[in-house]
Amino acid sequence: MTSSAHLTLEEMAARINGLAPDDTFRAHLSECADCATQLHRWHSVAAGVRQAAPVDLPPPSQPLYNVLNALNASSPRRTPKRIWAGIRRTRLIAIAAGVAAVTLSIGFVAVGRGGGEPTPTALENAKAVAATLVASTECADLKVAAGTVEAINGSSLVLRTESGKTITITTDGSTKVTHQVTGSVGDITSGTAVMVRGQGDESGKEVTAEQIAVLPKAVRMPNLPLEGGFLDMTRLMASRGVVMGTASAMGGDGFTVKGANGTEVKVVASSATPVVKQESTTLSELELGKYTVAVGVLTDDGTLSATIVQQDGLNNGAAPKLPENLPGGFAEKLRDRMSGEAPHDLFPNGFPKGLRGMTFSGLGCDADSIANNALFGSGMLTG
Amino acid sequence: MRNVRGPDGLQPTAVAIGPPAMGSDGYDDQLLQRIAAGDRSALGSLYQRHAGVVLAHLRLVTDDRGLSEEILQDTMLAVWHGAASYRGLSSVRSWIIAIARRKARDRFRRRRARFVDQEALVEHPAREPGPEEVALERATAEEVASAVKKLSVPHREVLNLVFGAGLTLAETAEALAIPVGTVKSRLASAKAVLARALAEEGHVR
Image 1 (cartoon, rainbow over the protein chains, first blue to last red):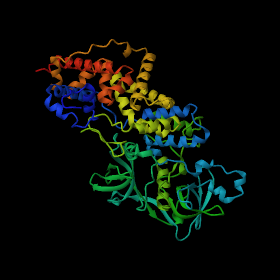
Image 2 (image 1 turned 120 degrees about the horizontal axis):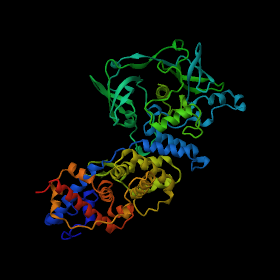
Image 3 (image 1 turned 120 degrees about the vertical axis):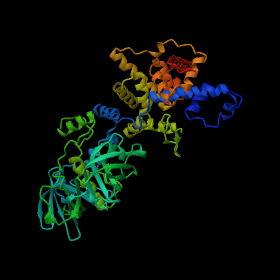
Image 4 (image 1 turned 180 degrees about the vertical axis):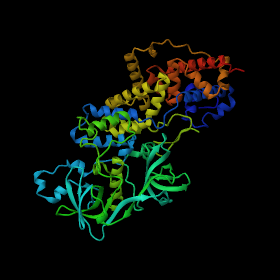
């Protein structure tokens, strides 16, 4: 392009759209008033067009939901081998698109894949039976059991899992046992790990807290296995009223929480905001009937030798309740699933509840983080 | 401030006034291949990359947000089922927009509503820039926007595909299924009508 050639319409559009470097036509434009005027006018047109048709960033999630639901309802164009992968991905997208209440239910774990019910053959093997009742983690040795406390016998306790089966948890002097107690906003300082539930604004930049759980310092956030970070999980969760991360910038009207992906969300809280936290206790102080998680090693006799036992006082019972704030079509789908009426589904093994929906991705052998994720992740479902 | 692409060429790192950067078409091509293989996360990625632009276009054309979202759904379903048929002749974005336009027409047909079938429209002859075009230099973006909304559908479409969706003229031609020459004349004609409307509102010297 020489400086003497007039700009074509194509070139003007490219320049206005930033597809041509700024200096490409500079020489010509400086000596051709006609082209400069035309470019100016097209610029004005472009500005008006962009104002008339503002682009949604990010686009609304509902249409994507509806498409995924439609795909689930029609006969899927997948081979049986692909079904699991497909469903997992579907859930990733569906969840990513804004289902805060099942935010942590990403990725199926062993319980889901294993089909749940022990076979007669498996019954002969206590460990194999127990293995169907616990969730696997990235750590080969660490399994997770969750359920309501059925009995406490000295140093062991019996948990009734969501499938109605029981599993025995054994403890020793080194087992860390905690339960949930009431805290205050004063428990939260810069660096405290928290999970906040409340009302999020549409942009996911601010959440007005209705309840805050202080997580133990040891806690790490699970990886959210969304490809290439195409969605900002923290914003999406926040827009649905949930934030999980590290507190900072403490102020009179709340604080800032930085999510696992680095995104910051403003949390509005006051001294009146209910706060809960885990506090050390002993096995005998745990309450019967309350939702409890245990992380430990599965032994040959089919018991779980726990390194951590945590009881969540807020989360009495692991029965799932339909979360609020779900987009229309999706909520109906979940409701159908929960009532067992939907033949086609997003969740072939049932609505993700208890451990089934948890992810321990990225947590490795960090038992504290695994326990907290199991506890608070489930809390999200049952709240 | 224009769109700036990240070092990987995929993610826009800054979006000011323009359309979201389309990034590398190579990545879009990969996404379509994965969609064709049944990968739903790829559909989600494609949605994140283009749905905002497609929806903005549909809203400008239909002036109905709910209807536009329905058409967007139809479009993404069609993308899912038709990904294997993408031949890479145009950009993925213009391919999706072409599908969206067909879906829009389907919806309007079903509703028996008046929807101008663009191909049936007689082209306005391209006009030489007249004295009223000076109005474009004086009007604010708000004033131009309000005038854009009153343009005919073909004019709104061509302007938005080029300046809103950020398509090249060739991609716009592909999306509208018309020759590139027609895109050019339609753009010029749209600008002239816009200028006249603004001039009538007093944006002249």
